[in-house]
Image 1 (cartoon, rainbow, N blue to C red):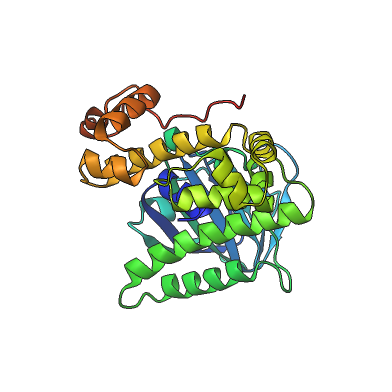
Image 2 (image 1 turned 90 degrees about the vertical axis):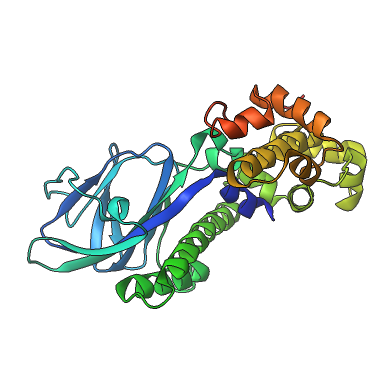
Length: 319
């Protein structure tokens, strides 16, 4: 898979959840912090205000998308002066996959599509750690067309579920998450505000090298091979990669291979020999030694303990 798809696959756990909620003025609702999750709100109709714990309220209009990558708390209301209620039941949290509800008074309606994704913080990829607390994608002609298309399909399916709705909604939620991240990365690059991993993905050569490693982690990559693949000398490639990604190319490759192995141990029943081969180790013994150095546990015990005893290995600092 490509880099962004891989990042989501490693971190996502369980199924995403969503709800289409019609709020009638006056209304105000607090959404508490939810560590280990990411959430979004899409304004389908009407208008409202985003009320952060600190800072100035932000007016939202139809078509706006707000995304909270780190599960920070916030509130929404029809007006900044409306009292905000503490949550009693979050439809998205209590739905198996999706739900619909109507909440509030008898005034003008605001329709929101909300949802959440469970992300395992112990498997946090540095790309997601680099994201801001809030991503706001404002509506506008020609802005974020992929996001708009996914939102339209998702809203329609939740409003009138058809045959196969569970699969359709789950797939569209994953698609929406990827489109939100892709739109933010593109917008940040356009404003020259990229740094860290966003800058690495915006760099054509380093992005191509990362893509190659993610698409074929079992290949016996060398720094010279990767540099030649993207048209850079070994030394120039190594310097630029370490400066943008934060660690040398082969250190990142080792980390990513073991992160992928952790996911395979968690999500599949594949034998250790097969996992070792899929992540680039020539023998089960070599794989087990490398895995234990990073995780502090042998692969078999990691799998038996339900993958709860050790976090995803953090990338080492460059040098």
